[in-house]
Image (cartoon, rainbow over all chains, first blue to last red; front, top):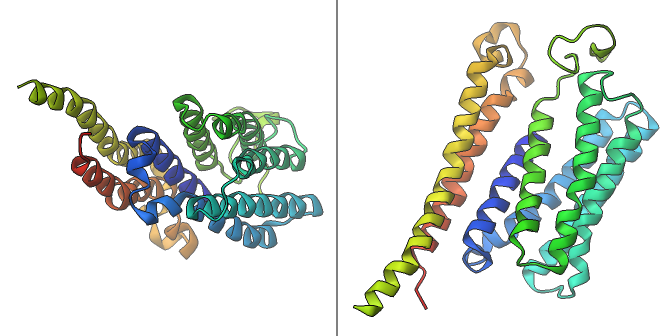
Length: 185
Length: 89
């Protein structure tokens, strides 16, 4: 479900780069869609944290995600509304991506090829850490197509990685032995 | 005539932008379709009796299809309308 959300967000970000902010912001609901969607996903993450927490570190990781997603979504809603104006508020987005990436990596204690789930966690973690550079650049150069496209591509990669996630699948195709997936009990 | 040429030159990038935005949704839908065909085992809909509600409600290739359709219907069409109606300064 989160993968679907990320895919829609990526498509929106890409469309926004193509049409430009002037056309994108003509519609009020479009202006609020991306930050609002991010905020709601942050809210939903609290539920995921409660339902999917197999351990304390899982709980901490998911709660951290939820908070930074809500912070970034809320700040950008304020920016869209005009209630927040300082450029520094835009830094909540790279903060959210960076913290999320660290949370992915911190709570995945197995190696890359241990299982499909471990592989996806590592991919998502590093994608988010590297992807945080794009909104960081966009905060200082908001009209840069490179940073904004990179931001959109980050969400595409995340969506693909999450769609590829299976509980019990092997890490890569039919790779045997150590790369076999561990099924959840 | 000069004004007409200017307007034609400015409308070419606009039509490319319209085409690009219009293509995003169908491309996502096509990707979902290809994925569904490539990994048919990830479609519990084809074996409804053997799967629970959650498996039937959340099928990744179909979610990709729905994402593309949602984007095209609710976002792309509005953008295309706004792009088509924007004035050349």
